[in-house]
Picture 1 (cartoon, one colour):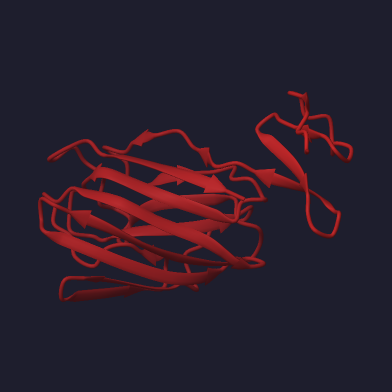
Picture 2 (cartoon, helix red, strand yellow):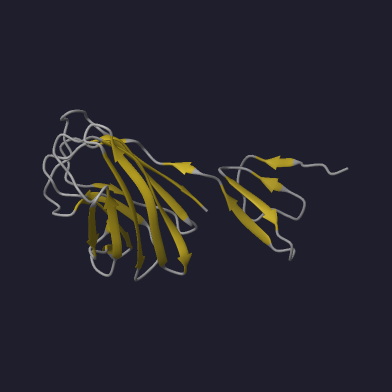
Length: 196
């Protein structure tokens, strides 16, 4: 019979063999006998995005392997498509992306970010999720689907980007960078979850 013992609720460093410590962090032993930190899924702070041209999530930990960007009731003031940019300690990167989106019979692509929609109207509200995953090193890939029931659009997208350094931030904006998230017909929200 195996016994799991919780020895502490305060992280005091790498726990000794046979112990598991919890303070938002878990440690386990892999098949090679190495001690490894296991990360739980973390949800960031929900942002009501009306009136802003971009939504930034920063201070993402270095151990993160996957980030999911979630949209609910999001609308923009014009016709510019949604764009997601990632970055590191040097800031958000706006070159070197290979990304595309397809919506009904319309396709769009971008090299300045992960494009998440391919057609846009100011009265459309969108919901859905885009996942950004670590392929290897500083290489990240995106995939996901967002939809607008009000406009009858369904946008699937994907892409890839190699960062200069370790990812620590995500930005949600538009291709032209000047359309604002608005309250017509609703004040939408955006959030991210991340995991190791």
